[in-house]
Image (cartoon, rainbow, N blue to C red; front, side):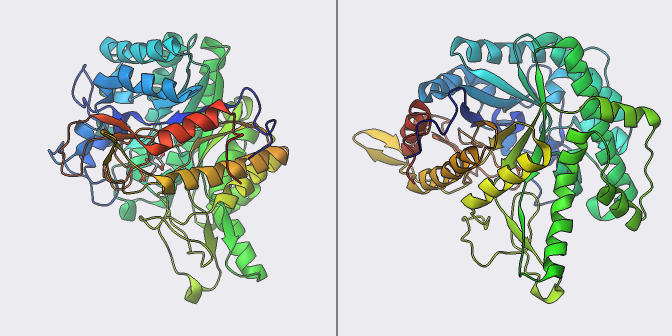
Length: 473
Ligand code: BG6
């Protein structure tokens, strides 16, 4: 039990998704191709030339046709908010056109209608791992400065069309992941091992400037909007108490923290500039870029949190484990999921405190959850999944959110990842399930796409209903 006052009365309970992992309809409604159409196995294999039939994302969970049914189920759980992304290539099929695709715009209008019908506040990611393929093939993605203009134009179209209906916006999903997954996160076609550091960090800079320009556009076109950055949060612990390990963990952690520092403070921190110098990176940064970054900082900081990692200066101790996009040194004190991601609920409290201490901006946990294999069973004539492991994972993480709130951290809400089963980002599997709602679809593409409520569906509904008081400590 948490104290009934732990979670604020306006806490935004909900769930999170991304267009490419739920919508399907990859070539319907005038949609263009995105990088996801050439990544049938996620980030586990090199991209293909064009779409291939083995790509589960072509149909995904068919949210494009079933959104009304799905949003009604979210409402049944009591969602206050629903995080989804807009597929850039539904609005601009190539990415560099002047005029948007009306059919794409109309689709998200229908999604917003359903949210409004149920009193659910939309939380919209402008770019979630779905750069239009044309921008990748023709411009090499975010390496090219021209993408700043294309993105700003896209964001302006969204704010003009939906600005009165959508309050919460995120500019780039897990913006820091571009350092580790350049194609997925930055739409960069040049393979990672051939990409120069200068091109990689120029892509980072271009995205940061684009994020600031979108923030400026929101202020102009949607004055009630709040714009947040989105950071893949991953606390880094020193593997031992040695000062060298502490310094190594700080250095690694700063590769993530830099993104929040720049979004919140509007300038490059000294340690980041030093690291660029040390790597021989020479960026093109104009005076205008500096001014744009400084004048258009974010309203809030959102984060995904799944794992913590360790770090050491001692090469002989560097046993690297798996993790969300980027892994890290394995922490021998933690257990791990079936996919090898280490589970650390206290790490969430640590990262919330760290971000709050550092930035003093409201925080929004827009992803957290357990990817696990589920077994569909029949109980009293009803199909369900007894997912006690998922309930335990989310319960333990939410208890730590409660602790952070009690520490005085301002947390706006919690939207666990994949509130309905979806296609995994890193491995493109259906069998890696996160949802409260089971979707009858399998890795070989078979399945009816029917939806079933898991045990966690009722559990989460009770957590929301009681505003966290039903959590077990
Ligand atoms: C985050 C992404 O990295 O983690 C999501 O924002 C992704 O798109 C989620 O799905 C979980 O990762 P995975 O690889 O298990 O789907």
